[in-house]
Length: 165
Image (cartoon, rainbow, N blue to C red):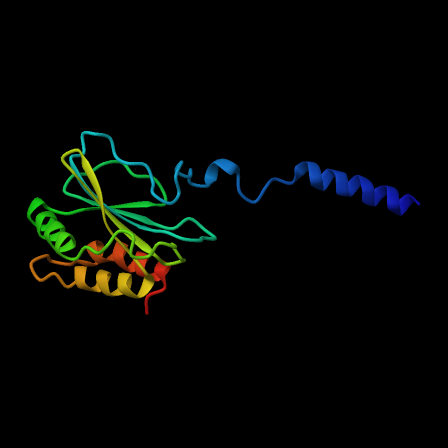
């Protein structure tokens, strides 16, 4: 009986002294909309958003591409391209758009491309996984953009989450 009393006291002491493995404030804050993210403020005139639609079991990256720097929070990633590269990039995505309703049911790995330019937002493409993988590869093959590791890393991150090989 004495041993049980000591064990209860010890268990209570350990419980009182134990601290959580991670404090709640150590986790990055989640955006209000984990699928589309929060649009930048209106001072940002031009941007492109590539986001993954469909089911998810963890926050997926949302890639924002712009000639302007603006604040982003996890899981958003911002890629700032020089103005000439951004113009080349947007020319490519406009010439490679697809029907926005091509994939009406957004299965896991479906990617949406949205462009915002001078106050107008347009969904340029909603594409299934296989098409998205080829799309990302074509973007990173645009010859007039110098694709450094820093510039390609966000695309490879999306490709990994989409399930590209």
